[in-house]
Image (cartoon, rainbow, N blue to C red; front, side):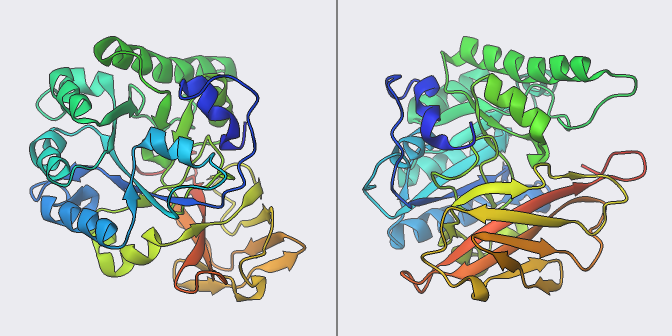
Length: 355
């Protein structure tokens, strides 16, 4: 299950008839937030005023802010109602979302999604929203979804843990959280946000087998070609909250990606200058020769063979999470760019990296 065309059936949003391949090239900008406040770590925070500015900008520039489940449906339509779609998501379920964020969402009457960790809610009730508060959000129209129980690095194996033991632990981390969410709020769509945005093919296989649509943290727009086990989102907090740069990202279009090599974002310590290749369904709406890719301060020119472009890094990636962003102007919409992000997580000598 690499394409979203089959996910509506098991989400319960449509009947389980044979899926029809959508012809739409609509893109959805998914914005990712964490804290909403001015007294929390800036690196993961957006103020209520900044959130309001983002919503106002979206509305003033003719974006339809839709629920995450509506976006899933709209991407399947041959002729979407709008060419500009946005989804607002919030990770972790911090209490300041209820205190500072809900009044903003109510003011502008827009939907949003909160990904929660039930275990952390129990262990730190002074920090996270409780079920009653989440019910209030749900009654307003918010979607409450799964961020695992533990918020662990899902790709990490523990010392002396077999592959089957790791699979069992990760599966339980996801499914136990979903069970608790469903028991507290009623049956919810199977939507997952990866902690730290980290995944690999083995994690994806567990997620797909369990019937989830999963969201990561590498940037880029979402379209019908997107891997339903690793949908991109644009961070919109801290320095990324500035609309002078965020506006360009929100306006971006998703490339029609059909295959990515390597399949995993996780790199071993000695894999400091990796390459990657991306195959597209078509290149009709842009000039491949105009694509540029950016890794840190380096600008890279991809090489093309047919509909596949390859990027070779020239500078070592740092330990931890990073990404290479590739952009190219649209022919049909000159003010908009196609945006593709390749995530990486390079391990240290012990096989780990910082949070």
